[in-house]
Length: 613
Image 1 (cartoon, rainbow, N blue to C red):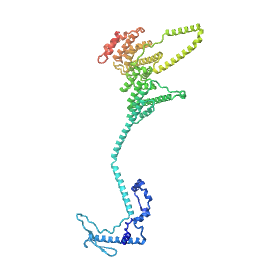
Image 2: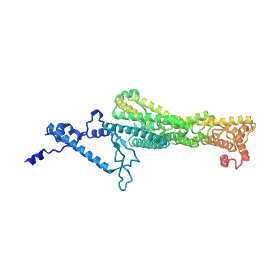
Image 3: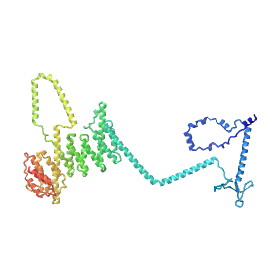
């Protein structure tokens, strides 16, 4: 029992606790705080612990009294002292005393003399250890260590920043190159995304125009971009869309009264579609006209304008398209001139698309253009008239038709006078017939406006307007040629045959007169023959003016004047009484002046063919 009680009373002391540090000196690092904040859920149990009971049990002195505790601590201190003394003796044994001649001793404050010692050399190691330990070294506390660590960290950060700055200075040229490469890559990426977006909008519009009509405005915004390639793509994409979705009729916007009226949802949707289409189409044409003035967009803009004129000549804003195309028919650029001339020729040939109204406008615009530039244009600008076609069966209505109408009216009056009793019964039938007749007239008028088939009167009027503008242009060219050759002969004294640079439009003018000579009014035949005689150099009295005009022309042009005169006489043989002797004499004179390498042999052959007929 005694042994058991002794074993129970035997107490194992706990290890020494760390020294107390005030809370002000405690410093927590940012990493510790981050770790605790990230794992808050795992540290919640700590707040519920009983710290007092834990400290008692940790020290293992919970059941002891104060006297017993003091004894335990005294024993612990005695054991520590013994251990320290043993360690010192062991260290002295390990060290070797240095020769007193080589090293002076050290005297302490208490009067004791200490001689220097050296640690023994370990086998295989060449390092020497100072086992004595310099007693002058002072150990740092935790707070001092932390402060020292902070200083070292700050110094390390400063050094890192300095290194980074030096690296940045060294890497500036490389960084500039990398920045340029990144900008190029981002520009290419944005260009590809915009191209894809433009294609998606166009496909959606072609698939369902009425539902996606708002996409037209988005596509128009691409034409305002800063990238030249993207602007061209936007113009061509809109061209393809407009060619497909433009209706086969002119859009008439509703008036204010019509807008105030209540209409169905379908009508509202159609009005919104038409108004949006018309507004975007107008803005697109304005953009084309502006870009046409810039050299880098000129070809694309002219191509779009000409394509629209060929595809939709019936649609709104046709006048602006025609004026833009007519200005370019005499351009010095071959591509632009050919595109414009082909568009005008398509208007002349395909009159079914517009009913002939666009043809009249184009001929009048060309006539004004020739007049404004004083006949100094490329020959192609007048040669387009060769694609015109006129109907010979369009003539004024005859008198018998009017007489038949008058007779029918008289017969009706007689019948009404003979049968007065049947008036009341037939009133209703007549009213119904009149209503049906009015309805038919309205339907036919709407059909004609939609199908572009004007009646005979309108066709006759349009044809007369075209012929007047056409022959006005031809006579102006003839007159200008005579005046220019006469003025140049007076200025230079003499002219060399074959100089035709001052009248480039004469050859296509003579070709057109030869083709349309049967449409010329008889009142102008005399003036035409006089002009041709002067230009050909003929005349019975060999007038000086005619000789001057003839010397300014080539042999081929003078032969063409004779050909036109022969055609005029052949087509109006019964109505004209003109002596062609002067033209015959001039034809034989021109044979003598003809040179195979200089003049055109086909023109000479045609002149003899017309002369024989």
